[in-house]
Length: 345
Image (cartoon, rainbow, N blue to C red; front, top):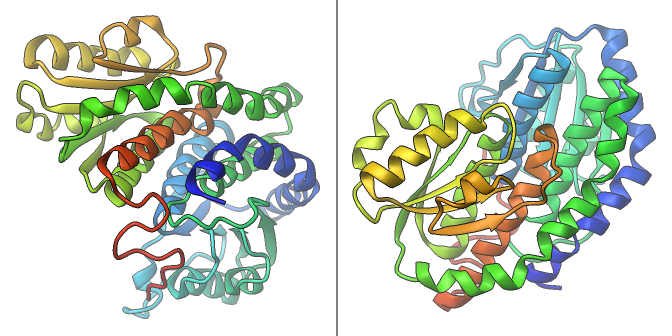
């Protein structure tokens, strides 16, 4: 098993998750409704933190639940946790072993909150600490960089959103995600042929907004850990509040802009960056208008609901980073100074 095989395995992982964890997730939704949780308090690190960003937008937009992203050090180093007893307390962790994330779940349960662990190891400490456990069913993930475990976490977030709202018309699009991911994977050889242009790239900005701010953050993380590129993720709105001043002709801007509510706003910025500032634009989109202005267009399936787009849009980003890592001669399986399980306090 390799990073490449784990990327290619994602359609099967997501299909398995849809089938095997439906009842567990629907039982969590029933408990949340019965408890009347005032919001969600979510703890995670690394790629799982980016899955939490997706939850912040999705559960906020569709389920009207405010989502607060935890500062785990308040629970460990400062020993001064906030009051979270009326919230759904969620921990997302591939390994389920990081003590600071576990401490948030334990404190939530001690305060009487409803607690949920989303993990790839149902025998892990975070699973032991929580009342409800959703196994992401990603299977062994040997490569240090998270890929299939990340999209599995996104799927759990999306499934819980659908379960909380109980609108049948959202179930069908959810079930089509594995095929959409498979379509995105069909661009593999095209993406491989494009990455040599970026062999000398040492820094860049990665832009997204709304649901796909999570994708921008995850793409930037993969560029850092695999390709050793100093990649800074920004909301396209935040980018205009100062950071845009660092852009000069030829500066690499990577962006995720699928069709949806944010499209027009982000496109306006990107057009300006290309026409007025001469940036080098790498763009993930399913709109021809966007792809046509990119130096390097990365195509998404055309029929892609915006609320589910992060599960699919991250796939070209993963492939881009995988092929760029190989082209640079770096180790795709074991990035330097990193390990699969990171324990922080």
